[in-house]
Image (tube, rainbow, N blue to C red):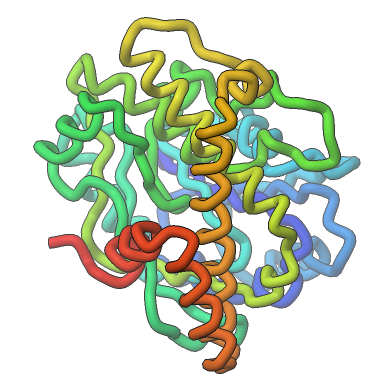
Length: 327
């Protein structure tokens, strides 16, 4: 019996899901389960998956269908409690795995019993699956750097296709669902993986390690339709990241965590102004990326310029993580 489950949380990705499944079907390591959780898709995504499995794929495949849309954090929590294997990996329904993704991650995590999560780098592709400039080159690539960051209370950025030990995700509290305001915007679904990785990093105190292989092992799809996403949503995500960081620091200092509302009440007006400048910089930087993909170069330079005006340091950090590979 294999000990890996790959989970796809499916929601309205009819244009990409078959390519994603094909990439998993071609893995050099075949011995893994696949769990598809359909979060009440309203397009043909689920039908395409079912038709695909009639002709292709693994013997160990399971589809779970939600009766209403619950969101990514709920779906991932469901998966944590549903699967039985000790190792899990979440894979986005519009990304493409290289053939050696699972084998590379598994070989790494098996080398050291103290490894509780292993991730990798990504290369950007567009909606037509063409490679475009940039990628995500983040995460500690050696143990020394990991322990340094963990001790200093740094956020643990790892990409979604991270192979991790399920028991430590559960011990860390799984995906956070409670303590958020009841609004149309689901704060629990914003940076939910970053929140979990940062809480799992607490186990550094007992010698547990979260490591990144410095190789591109999957293709991350940059969907320019996201350009229509509101500034409000992006600002909310930035606030969620700050909330995650605040609770990480509190745990490192043996203090109780805050819920999201409590955290917002601690922000001074001076801090709000500073955050607003950073968030505007992030918004225009993101738009610049979309404009570049669409070859709207005038708008690209306009958005880059505005981003720099709001906060020149933000773009420097993004270039380091998205375009310069760690060595």
